[in-house]
Image 1 (tube, rainbow, N blue to C red):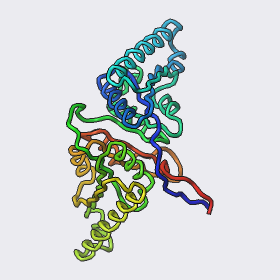
Image 2 (cartoon, rainbow, N blue to C red):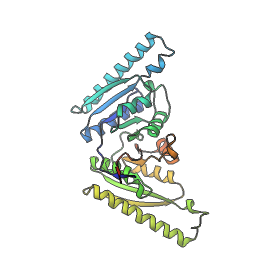
Image 3 (tube, rainbow, N blue to C red):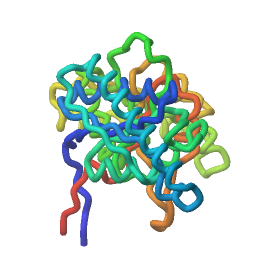
Image 4 (cartoon, rainbow, N blue to C red):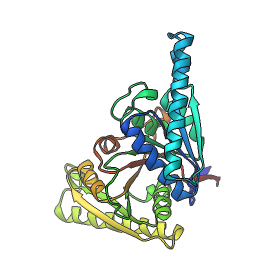
Length: 301
């Protein structure tokens, strides 16, 4: 028998997709700031997709694509070094398509950063296509950069939590807040409509359910403090009828929203829930999706 034990995660190097689009350039500079804050390196990846292109394009076209990709990487690295002269920056021209290329570059411990729109090396994929694809399949945290790049920082990281089982991925949110010296806000949405029609429809029962949720989120905040004693952690249970709507509103008042990716049903296929889809399309700040068990270790029991 095995069990998953939460551990304090180490935030790895930052891998960012480079495609020449305005969204991509914003994501690169945002990723550079993250890497600089972590004291890690920044790895620039341009997915030229030449393996697939070679099936229908001639050698001259493939060579031109590669040259354009190299020039874009050099130009991007130069821009980053001007802003962050002490940051270690590496470049990679991937032969794969964007999702596969970024996953391969991140390995098992990196953090992937992408813009919310992709062009150029991402084969003209539009709103959220690469972000959704990577977030649904990667085994490492994925951050989709959204919102205004020049918005003043709030000094907070928000984690969208459900309950005690979130502790594994929640420690990644805690690590992000700790690296930023920011407040970690745990926000749980209690949607009364989810209980309508169940056996617990009486007002007194609903009040008791709400109190239990508040107690559970407080206990979750206490567990985070055990791992990060110096971290300022607050917890809130919001009541409403639209979980995505409440969380989108919360993104207007925080620097990063972190949430866990759903477990795969019967282990089949990637899973990215409705709330994550809404946030990746409408959030006012970058959104980080953390896969299940990223910040856990498996022990035999």
